[in-house]
Length: 354
Image (cartoon, rainbow, N blue to C red):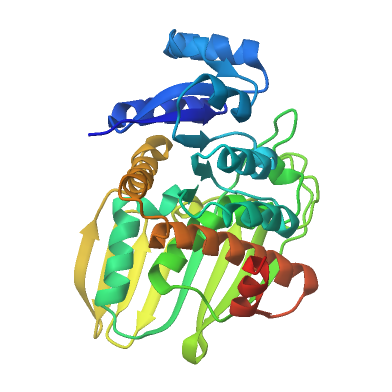
């Protein structure tokens, strides 16, 4: 099995956990680390890999001149993602970037213009939540067991404390609820039902010093109605500033789901998926939901990234969906901002026609 040498960008706890996962796959091997604070990064990496600590650089462009690498994994601050992705692509690297690749449409267009230049490079935006056992099974059963979908809904309900200094991007930039929390549920929606034809979204307005919300538009929660072919509706309610978990603990990231179809209804609460037909329970399965630290979920997607590189598959469904999901989140933000229904196909075409 070929080991793909990679550059890791970022040395936070999340990034270091992913470094461990990547090396343990046997498919990737760390060649260098990039962090703007080289001294601090070296100290962190040294505890993990003394040899790797000799290859810590301030940027990707410098690192690629010093080491051999084919891929780049970006786990840095969200506000730096667009520039980092562009730099990595310009260096000829396959790129895996944890969500979200961009903060807004202006950044995204800049990124996408660069991506289009490199047709032989794999780009994947990480939406790990759709790859656990329960999420995969839900997608399978929605497509096979309930007939034609007539309606559905998802609730994501949690209370997220992020009072750090400096503040996280989540509370400083418009629309970050959809791009950093709502994306976990709505990426699953796309995998189950595809892209909607239209959508209408509303963003909560709230300031909450306890939770570190700054009152920036679109950071606390959202309500969205997605309209599919034949006016099939799917409603989504997401909340970062709830006061409990009325839909179950797993609702925070996995979402609490219900699909209504011509041949049955499907309900999911965390790892439990229940199929109803004609008033009776026909199937009741218990599967693994999110793993601790989303490790297994991330690993599944990392393996897809590896396979696309090895097989030279530069236009896989996974890659296409990762871009579509970003466009969907941004369409929700635009709808909430303008208070109007969005034709998603038209919006996406305009966003990608660069």
